[in-house]
Amino acid sequence: LLALLDFESVCFGAFAYDVMVTICAWCYTTRFEAELVEALLRGYHRVRPLVGAEVEALKTEGAIGCLRFATTRITDFSLRAPPGQAPLRDYRRFLARLSAIEAGDLDDCFARALV
Image 1: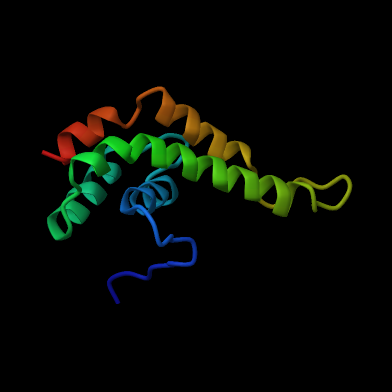
Image 2: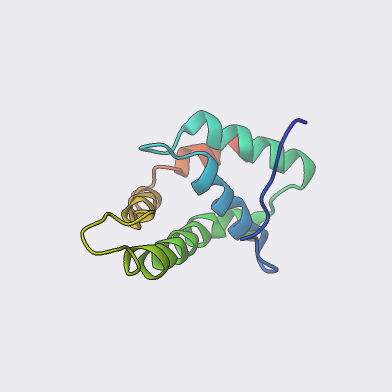
């Protein structure tokens, strides 16, 4: 077994969204790990090249993904945590990813990996 993939949250729309959701899930610890981001993008790009409009949409799709996951964390976990207990999943982790995307933390990764 080389990999186990969970496609529960993939969409039927933009591939750029799915790529960015994967990057946000697999390539983020306390920050985006550039080596992981670039490896994922290169591997994906080798099999199915991302074209101009998709590359341009990566930041926007990443931001949308972060907001979507932050929202579900707030509604599904934070609001349902028992009184006095911390939520099971912290929505702020996705807001941190969003801030990093908006700050351009992935821009160099995109430029290096998608040439």
